[in-house]
Image 1: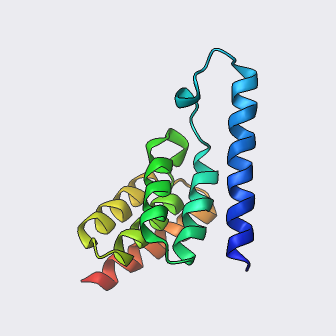
Image 2: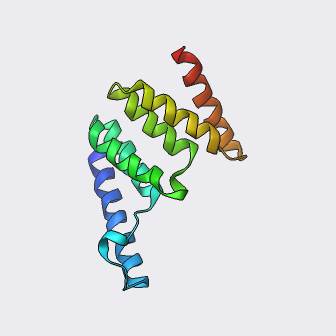
Length: 123
């Protein structure tokens, strides 16, 4: 996968999403526009894959602040970033939060099982 191109496209999608939100609600100030958590997750994951851990952390922490960012997969990505920078305590907390918010869908249950294994392997 071409991570530089992926990053460029995700940043373009974020910018376009901000424009659309501004257009839909012209009274919003730029700092009041919330970025799409899924786009932030994608950006964070691409940055992680490029070993740009601090940037990835910033993007993923922003994603999980949004209600739609409270998702087992996004929290798993954040935990993996925390592990990469050596913050095991934060990683465990993110994984545990992911277990709490995992939904009933098959995909989320598979992700939940993956996270449970990661936590078990840490012991």
